[in-house]
Length: 303
Image 1 (tube, helix red, strand yellow):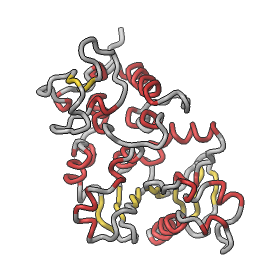
Image 2 (cartoon, rainbow, N blue to C red; image 1 turned 30 degrees about the vertical axis):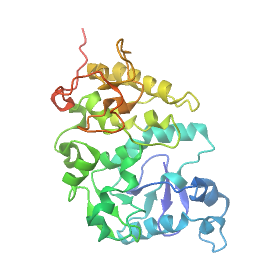
Image 3 (cartoon, helix red, strand yellow; image 1 turned 135 degrees about the vertical axis):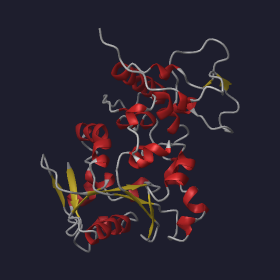
Image 4 (cartoon, rainbow, N blue to C red; image 1 turned 120 degrees about the horizontal axis):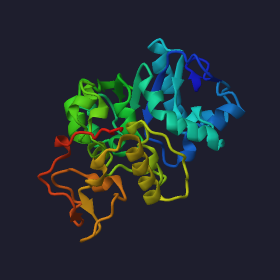
């Protein structure tokens, strides 16, 4: 695991014996080229004032996260944009398959809401409307860590996950018990967990599936270029092979009128919102009175 030093802003690789660290959850900038990457920091020390990385629009975010971590007493931080060498397909694959563990083992997860101006706005509509809640990768980044702190654009503390767990549950449709960690996530059915991912957006189509690996505690090869549907079908097959959870077959919405496929083509087919404009044109494959909250996770029976 590669970590960024919060004082020197230097990267260091830890093959084992990982030190205490905090982690950043954020929404990537548009264009993504303005983010500070591993290559930026690796090619020229970021500590130098003339470092190209310092000229990028994403640098203040890196600096702000490091300053916050340093004030909190942490020497190390993990940030996806600069702690993964994305030129290495092997490292990228390992990082994506390990992402849940990275977040769950962090001491604190700092959530940076760049579209919430200050802490006062964090207690108004701008918090609910933040795009951070709509992204695919941020689902596991919200659930996996025990301690999650939300910060505004000016790095003012808004709240913790526990303080706003009811509102966050309403925004995301995630069961409050998951946010409070009063019930193990394994007890929730695959269908219900997939419903939490409905309508979340990703930049690369396949990430709609790859961003859910940790949620189901599974691993699978990444095949960028296979397309959204093939990636999601492979995800469901891997989930079933690991859990034998039959709720995978209970997707609520479908493009088909009569004969239904065995597996859904998108997490959106598991959408459980009472009123959803995006799903209104689809065919109902599962009656509305059957709720995922009433379906227990299946268990594999061995003979």
